[in-house]
Length: 315
Image 1: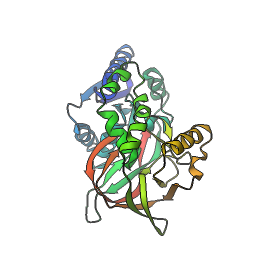
Image 2: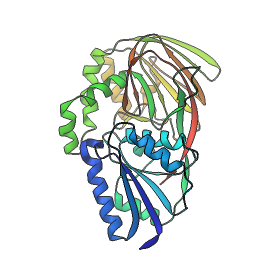
Image 3: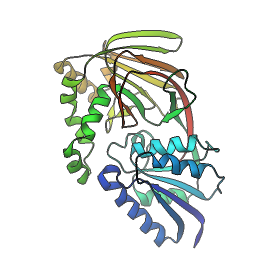
Image 4: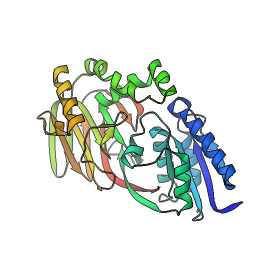
């Protein structure tokens, strides 16, 4: 047996419409062939990975042990929250993207190839300090929540909602093109999403937007399976960015999307705003769709206090 590595797998087999299970099977086969010790814990319901990761983080582990998360961005979010709530919130872990959007994997330049990841582990385990966001649901709350990607209110959450309930998403996932569902739902969500007022406080300034359409506090450039909303955002900048986009026409959407794909110049549009700071407060006046790392949050109005935090990622 190879005593240099011990792999602890936390898996959401349903991620990517079952793609995570296929990846897990590949990982298990590799570990068996390499005589590497491993164990597996699988989530059976939404939120269980939080508990499983927290239990792992309650104990100290040897330097040759690896906690490996296999799933989508929602699975990563649960594992992150579990580790951060444990007695050892700096416990490092690795992530093998196997979901639909895989935006964090893109931002962190992570491999989705199990063989390459195992090779990285065998060459030495080094953890990188990676930014994440934290927030409280209200100023009086004592419970912190964490995100690796973003917390979105409005349009991106609306796209996320209708993409998640689409039967076509399952078909696209079967051919590993699940991220296309987000693009297909952009136009329909543009018609359905209303405008709302938002107050954003950050960098010592208070700003008001009365016709907000999208309000996303993000840790990196991407959302919706690779759309580069804010090219300047980085997972190691030690800052968060809140993007506010005001309502625009379908014709203007087409122009902005071309700019987004071409050179990122959409950020200079007069209806595009962003605030960069290590602490940001966002307050909305109406009930809206919201998403947390791609997972849907029920319709609500929000008063959120965001702050920059970090975790240790093996990659």
